[in-house]
Each structure stands twice: as C-alpha cells, then as structure tokens.
Length: 265
Image (cartoon, rainbow, N blue to C red; front, side, top):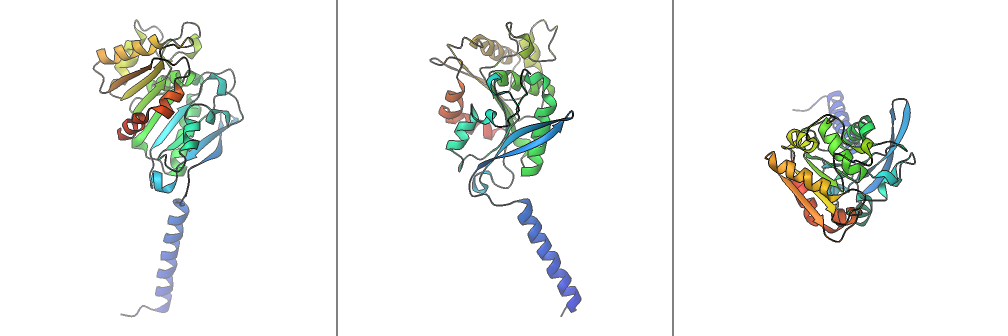
C-alpha cells in the first residue's frame, strides 16, 4: 500500500521530532563534569553544583547522591563545597563514577537545619534536569554536613535509600544549633532518631582521634540503631584519623560505593 505524499511527509516529520527529542533529553556525555546551577530560595539566589556522570558510567537514569559540606565551606560562591569531601574523589574518578552528585551550599553563619528548603529544592531540580533515579537517592555529609545528613533524613523518612554520615552526630553540647531538629525534649535523642530511621540503611564513619566532633556521638547513634532493630546499621571508626575522616571514607573505602549503590527504596 502506498501512502499519500502528505501522510508520508507527516510520518517522517513525527519520526524526526521523536529522534530529536530523545537526543535533547538524554545528551551523551563522554566524561563526568561539574556544572553550576542556581535557584531562588525565599527571594535569594542560591548557587549550587551538580556532578553529572559520563553517560557510559551513569546510564540513562543514574543514582543520585546529595553531599552536605562542613562549616568551612559555607558561603555564596557556589564552588567551595566541591573542594572538600567527595568532590576531590569525583575529580579523580570523573570518567567512572556512576552517580549524579548534588552540592548545595549553606550560607555563611547558618546550619543545615535552617537550610532544608535549599537541600530538597536542589535535589529535586537536579533529579529532574539530569533524569536521576528517585529510588536510588542517597545522602551523605561531613562534620556539620554529617549532622545535616541526620537532620534531612529525619525530615523525610523514606526519601533516601541510604545514609552515610561522616564525623557527624545528632547533638553537640558546644554548638547546640548544629544539632538535629525535631528531637528537642526527647529523653533520649539517639533513640528518637533511631526509632524514626531504623528502616533506612546507615553506614557511619568517624575518626577515633576526632577532637572536634567526638566519635562517641557516632558510637551512641550506632548503639541506638542496633537497639531499635535497624535494618542495616554499620559503623567504621578509623583508628588514626582525627576530624578529617572524610578522605578515608570517600577515597579509601571502596566498599562504601558498592554498598551504597546496592541500596534501593
């Protein structure tokens, strides 16, 4: 059967549009790279970074990691948060790392507990733009960001497939503002967090010699998770590490990535 010329032309146009749309929505990336983005949050422009994996590494729907930086990377430059923690590891493995990584930046003199809107807005925007997998979305952070990891997970239980707090905690006697929100008045704050997050896989990391955030905070949190019957609670204490346990975590513990990417909601 021969199609009329007008019908044939319409079919060719439809096929071209479909092919073009597919190319535009999933561009091929030969290497992973950092891209800068910005969002309006409460009338303020917030700059953040996203590591976008190479197409061969991440596939069409890559897993997503949210990384929360420490106190020293606060600001508004939109870049410092990529220089400490997971960022250097990504630069060393940019062709092979398979995940989309979102780097929000907390403003100066603020805590992550006061920036939940920023964290979730950047996560949502990056997941939409780069086609991240919402069922393989993970949360990690160091120091202040370790506290932020617990805080964001408490705000959205079930949102994250796994957590990896580094040198963090849920309370801090010398800096109460950094503590996890929503547990004020709890007789046992560790038990309160564990009861809410026992179904989320957690792997904590800490330095045994940490004199900034005591490793006892992670030990107490691990004990509370175990007592609550947590689905999967792990703790690694690096015997020779002080506060910087993030290099040992992200760059020297390859088992972390195997474990993390195996988790799914």
